[in-house]
Image (cartoon, rainbow, N blue to C red; front, side, top):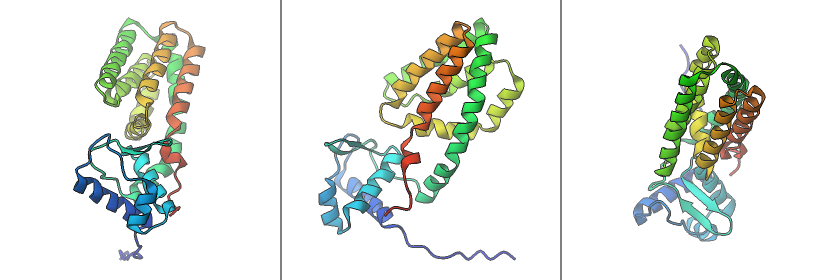
Length: 234
């Protein structure tokens, strides 16, 4: 019989700081756009080092819950601080590079084939996806549905059953990488602009330009706060 007992671990200090910040936000009734107390004040009130405060803020940034503005403090991007368990973040950080490698390998080829094989119905689906994403961003949302529809339309336009099956197999991981990217500050509008470039190359039946535009887009997707976070710092 497998032993289910595991070593007991203490919460990292920055995890305790995050719990205190969550209570502060709830207790003070803070909302999206409100500013958290300065790092120095938090360190003094919680009696911890500023390094622990900084790490707690980084973890909240990774999850899109706060935004650090250079020289301007830390502001809420949500009405409550309800972070994921750190263990879940660590696991996502571990698998994300492999997911992004797979996306680049598959989606650059899909963009190339879409430029060569697309028909009028495919172009209509791509354009409809861009409109959905634009409307979502205009409403202040991340544009995740439109992003999903766009990449699905490009996949369909490639007319490759096997590549489409590969994309379905990693659909859950792709959705995770999509959310990770689009929650970065100012990322949704940039992503939409890149989608427009990909669509233009496919419409022009220019496979080289489609590959380049998709690769540029996926390089941007790679630039997420999660991958620069060191979970072992305290």
